[in-house]
Length: 333
Image (cartoon, rainbow, N blue to C red; front, side, top):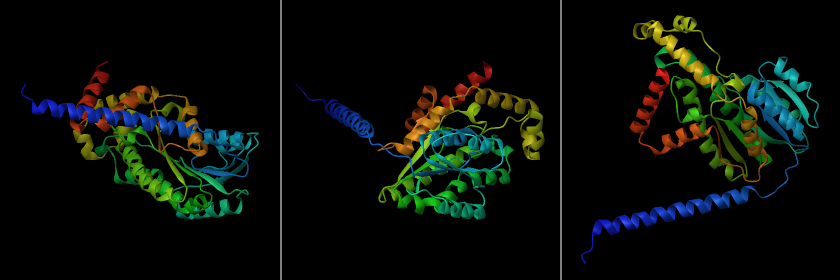
């Protein structure tokens, strides 16, 4: 019988694919086994610095870590605000240190570093959680360079500032560095500023993780989905106010009706998010305490996870078309 070359080639490729999948599954199983090994981390005498503790994930995380017995340096933009006051009223076995920190200020970073060094418990600084962040939504042409610079300075450069300042203390104790990213690092629409800061943060962490591995320091990225109702990171903007803020050139292209529709679209999407902040906090705690933490924690709904995986594996043009159709259906619903 005559052989069919292309058929043999297909069989070989299928075998390679099967073996790759089997080895991948085996690797995942081994990784999970290693992560579930019980290694007790005693929080007593260990400190964790958290930025952005005024509200949201940072505030809830501070409460959790205090309950576990950690010493918590809660960095707040408003150290006398409601969030800081709620932390001070929290009765727990841990020790609380509230400090003012604007992550865009080099001077305040240095002051915070000195304060932390002067008040460290006996086991030193174990963790740094870069949580501080802000968001401004809108199409690229609606935004000014000042707005881009503002969000970049907080979300990306702010995390880099704290990393440069506190990395020596974390390295000394072979501790953990945790960064709050977002699924918007992969998927973005009408939030280019926020998305680019998170994408930049991901690449910064990828380099940092490899560099710190030789010192025994673990670097972890938390990638939450839509938790807007739980954090209020994205303030609602009235269509009229948004229209008034547009550059003159943008007003010639986009109508008031379009601005109204866009505002309603974003509002609906934000309000449909999860209120379960504890899911993200659970991931951060695991990153800080697990014997073998994940490099990335994708904390999102099933639909959001599928969207991320499709983005990673599908051709860009096809993925863009899927999003275009999905948004059009959402608008017409």
